[in-house]
Image (tube, rainbow, N blue to C red; front, side, top):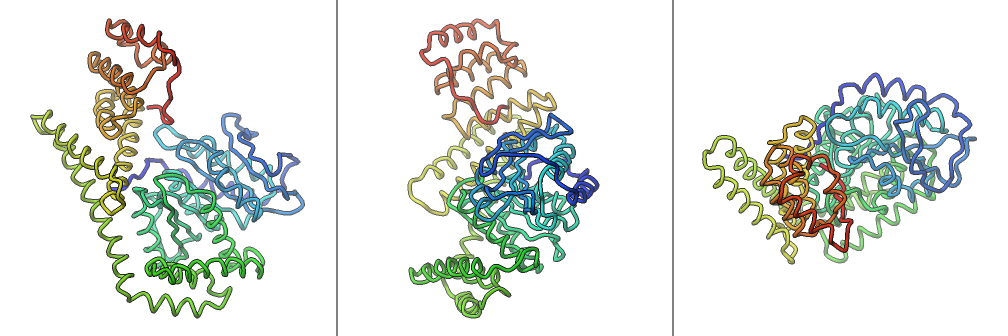
Length: 483
């Protein structure tokens, strides 16, 4: 029931293996600003490909540096580079974020990843034993599949807001270490939790971190914690030299937090921290005390209740999604489409009320995860229908998306464009009116968007244009993801 973000990964083995092998070549004489984000580095062999880049202030070609390759679902390379730059500066990492990799159909990931790896390998002084990948949402799946097919040439993956690609299966022989991250209201939180649990049970090295938030890149502090965990794993695997000062610093900080939670009677949180601490520092420090504490707390009522709540959240989220999909499926066969649509609207309205509840609780958390899941799922479907030029299906999908975000003018503007393309002229104009009522006032956009050509000469449309031309604010907000 989770959102998998469709990609074609079948190409990756040969491309990745070849390009990681060339990472041993000498870096060319290429100068970039140090300690600053370079938002666009154009690939030497393909000017259509580019990436955002961060080199730590101490970077020099005289030595080789670990590198983190980042993949954002919206091709926003600078965003993950910004989130990881603090950690990159502190621990000496290069960060390269693709400006081309994104979710959706028609994306040539083979070409994108090949260009990114080849260009950075040729121009930067990279430590070939310490290449890492990270990604958010669909980008997390890209990060994991690159690591799978690299045959051990990727040391670790930081998966944010999603787990592995369906083509990448967990195993005890996982060729990289995995750090999963998700927000408390992220609809993929349960997926990431389950993945990390499975990997640990198989004997692979994995860890999970959660932060207060939705389906998004984690904040910089969490990104730094992920890099610190990678540093510990690098010392364990001897990919980097032991640093006793760093080990002591990280150990003390983690122990202090765990002890603080235990003292505050946050038993479940303390258990998770003691358990992770004992595993993460095994072989680096004396973890006996914390392993004993974790073992003692494991059978406590509070810890059992904590895992029980996890299960309840999982089951409730699955129920909400199952009910939505089942009702939506009725649209394909039920003669009374109006009644079925009303059922869907009622279902979404109930979820929205739960999500907007001011009191924290399982119902609110799960409702927010579910609403976010439905929104992303419908947007992905819409992108696929647009790519296939199936405009009737596109309009039907965006009608449901507008129910999920009924106060967002862009929801109705996207719906109006789809209806126009589908030949639903009257419905398109009505959706445009709703968009305007809710705050859309981009006069130039309405005049020039080619999707609206079918209704350009409609009387109601021209009247709308006339009223908007008199608006004191000619430029309305634009949605981040144009459908």
